[in-house]
Length: 459
Ligand SMILES: Cc1cc2nc3c(=O)[nH]c(=O)nc-3n(C[C@H](O)[C@H](O)[C@H](O)COP(=O)(O)OP(=O)(O)OC[C@H]3O[C@@H](n4cnc5c(N)ncnc54)[C@H](O)[C@@H]3O)c2cc1C
Ligand SMILES: NC(=O)C1=CN([C@@H]2O[C@H](COP(=O)(O)OP(=O)(O)OC[C@H]3O[C@@H](n4cnc5c(N)ncnc54)[C@H](OP(=O)(O)O)[C@@H]3O)[C@@H](O)[C@H]2O)C=CC1
Ligand SMILES: Nc1ccccc1C(=O)C[C@H](N)C(=O)O
Image (cartoon, rainbow, N blue to C red; front, top):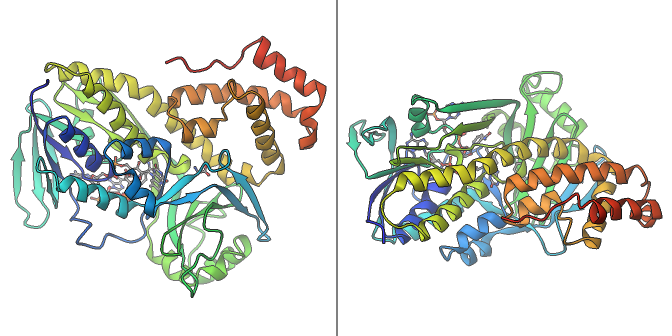
């Protein structure tokens, strides 16, 4: 049994709130410090990431604290992508096998559910309107500013967790320590959230159980369903250039552009102009850093250690998986060597965090461009056939990432090998019927059986 610690978590977002429950389960006392006010009693800023896609890695972590069923009741399954072309014509692409889905959940709703569950635990205390403004890693002291009163206080926990998101203050302090690797890169794209409201009878104006994409080559709009019948749309758009945020200066520009490129969506967006000019443009950043801990006293987790662009719908899921992995390590943890534990954790998670960061960037190109190409959709169908014929050897990349707990690094590596084989296969394919041609079957037999190009994951 390990000694009970006083733990401070910076940031009561999705990861911080869930982490508190897991750490309390292991017998520790937790204080959470959150810069924002309590979202359960205040309205949060509009125009920012309203809903999220939750998938298997996230569900696993929610299940571990018994909240899975409650969240499932309000989660909307999205079984596949629906692409909208410039004439409003629709194409479907399933995410996985029949019944497999990613789930649209409300960010605020999920955070509220986690907060309600953790606040009823006498070992967990929330402190809102407290911003970490200075972190002394050596002394493990954090200076907090009370946003309401302007006063400052200093805390000195036994252990400090930085769950304070992509622009983490705890990570900021680590950046000033010796041999800390840090890399950030911004896309030349930003995002803006818009809305398709519910229909007059409270229903969904477009297919409810899908993630909608308007792929336009260099940019795209997507829409995820909400329980109230609305959709949250996100426009991913270059900052500069011919088609860009900079090029849309007024309502006339906006409507001319949207009517031309998203003609089926515009009639469903009555507040388009108002929302477009009121809602902020968010930046899209990847942050990679290492190490994630300092002298066994502090540890970064979630976006604070690995912010990824949102295109795989995996940022939160990856953060939740961090917690699952930490929980497994704590199950076998004896004694008091937190430095060793944190080292083991960061070494195990870092390759996977790097992999999902790269996969997320690649998925942007797929979503904004490739999904509009009939050859790409044919290739996906052929891949499903291969996976059906060789289920032990071939799990599609999207399935590995979304519907399994295989390491992201294994998924990325295997996906690259699959890509090479698919390129060879597709040279012989003009239609789905070609799959049964002898040259295709021989090629697969050679690559998958004789040469064993794809190795199963062996831990
Ligand atoms: C447009 C968009 C869409 C996304 N869609 C998905 C998706 O579909 N699926 C998915 O899995 N992920 C998605 N993500 C990623 C997901 O939002 C993040 O990975 C997730 O929120 C990370 O959780 P976190 O708790 O680590 O950080 P956050 O959610 O950012 O929480 C950090 C908390 O720390 C607080 N904080 C920050 N600084 C301080 C400070 N100095 N002192 C005290 N508190 C502080 C913040 O107020 C915040 O509450 C998306 C992201 C974006 C931008
Ligand atoms: N990987 C990515 O591309 C992105 C990831 N996210 C993640 O999504 C989650 C929730 O997003 P959301 O609540 O909308 O967060 P926000 O985008 O509202 O950011 C939260 C706060 O971070 C600070 N911030 C924003 N941009 C910067 C910047 N460029 N440099 C320094 N600080 C900045 C701002 O604080 P202040 O007001 O004090 O300046 C802002 O209020 C977070 O996990 C965030 O980590 C969010 C956006 C992009
Ligand atoms: N949640 C998101 C937010 C922004 C951009 C994409 C997503 C996705 O989930 C995409 C989905 N995984 C897809 O591949 O179709």
